[in-house]
Image 1 (cartoon, rainbow, N blue to C red):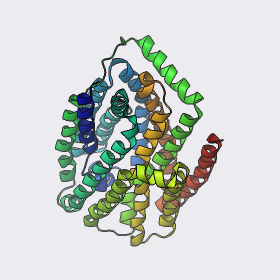
Image 2 (image 1 turned 60 degrees about the vertical axis):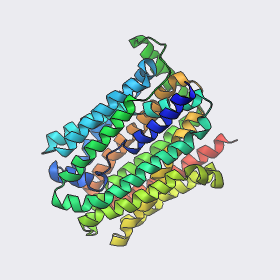
Image 3 (image 1 turned 90 degrees about the vertical axis):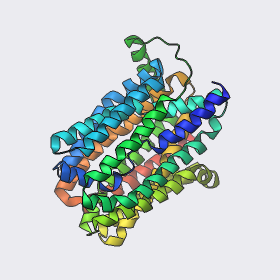
Length: 393
């Protein structure tokens, strides 16, 4: 690719990341599914688990398809499905429409998973600029978090008028990311598609992950951090209700947590440069494990702000994971497949943990379940850190 194409891709990628996810749904997502979809919290955990199963089934095949026919084509398909899912969430009138919206989201998520990062990384690598990936990714993701935080300030007041208003506002901004994807450029695909070649790519990608120790480690560590964060996120609204936080303040809390996530993502490359990779890993584990336990043991309004610690990890984990992964992937032609294997592993673990946590919430309530979650994260985190240190030997 020439320099002009790479520069254009950098600008388009920043726009794509900025509007990649809905800007207004975070503070009231679970509440909207409960009230508009008429579903209980255990029902939502089951719904999310089933949705992740679909992601697992589609993730690796869609990644191999992207490596064969072009990442841009697959990314466009994913964006269109995600846009349709936004209409589904905004128009939810019961459990069936809630399920439909989640199914559309799962298809869209699976098709874009790995394709976006791989397309951008390969663009940079074509001009020897892969060293700026982590900085660019961190700042782009951070800008989205900042914008999401600013949008969160109006979610609470709008939701008190009508829960559907914030969901409807998400749609035009997601459309901007769809347009950006159409203008991406990537090197011409030289491979001809066939089922046999796709299966061969799947095997090659899985084999690489299983036999590369560093990649195997980041896949499992990323699954631990993202899985625990996902579970914690689904407890936000129930916890807010438990400590009697007025809905009009939900947006303010989400504004603060997105500001924290923005700072964490924006300066991720500087933080790791100052503290080292190993210390960054320890901090991420502690930021997830300890606050969750405190929230479960001390259910009072000030503890709502402990979710800010989870968002330190939320902002840091994406540039950390993708940079670590891409540094250890040698073959560009299977990059998306390997990234999809990572995503599939994380989703598979999320399926199990979300299902177990849903059962746990139904039996011992959300507060005690948070304590259990924190203990598990700290134990598995210690094991993961020891495994990381053995890689340096």
